[in-house]
Image (tube, rainbow, N blue to C red; front, side, top):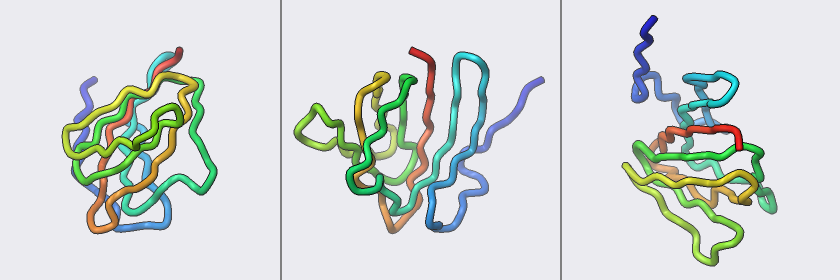
Length: 109
């Protein structure tokens, strides 16, 4: 059965927490739409996931810091980054003036 995903529909108003919509999940892959508006990783917190992650910014802007790289990476609409499993990273900034909509794909390493 086909399912239509409208990634730009039902965008939540600015909230305290990110909004995560799981679009697809099975044993080997997970795809999510994430909506951020001003949310960042807590001070001192680093993601260090068991899964690989590929993430694309569909709208808005965000900055990601990868521990092993000196300069943070700023992503805008159409920009994507691959974050291999166990690469420590954090969200340094997301646009406060508009929603940042991410498409994130996770798969097992």
